[in-house]
Image (cartoon, rainbow, N blue to C red; front, top):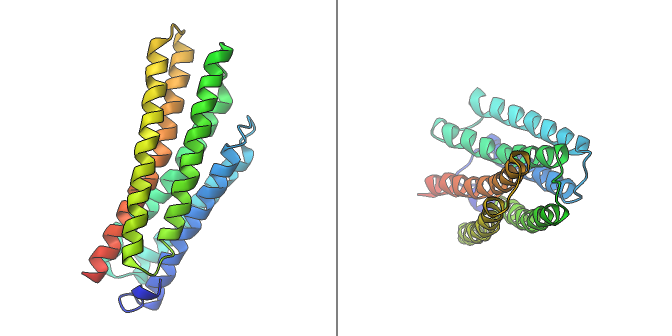
Length: 207
């Protein structure tokens, strides 16, 4: 982040670096979610830790640790990053609470989960690299790569929606499949939103 040193005070740079702690927690939560374990205790613990980090950063931001013109955008950034962890937890909780009655349908959902989880891991790794980069050109490139991953995720989500509507399921099965698709998409949406907000902040700093 050396290219920001001319634009940030010491405290501000520290706060920017702290934001990546949330992304690191999201990476850990996503790795736990990949196990498809019905016990989501570890993911819940990570989600609670993310809330603590967000609270800590928000206090630093609002207590004068950052320039007034950056406050709203910085608060929005950590909210979006925390939203990634929340979405992973929410998906995992939905997956853990119910199993589809039809084995083929359950396999279809698991296939979508594996694909979306892999997309999320790629997007999170790019977001982490983005927030550690010392090049605005690289930041923009990484942001574009995250956008492409989110679009690939949309295709998986839409296919799962189509599958849910096409099958003759009872309401619980339909709702569960629909929720899984929606919550998986939330993970990638929040990754893209976080990347957009980070780029917005950098652009306002160097313009």
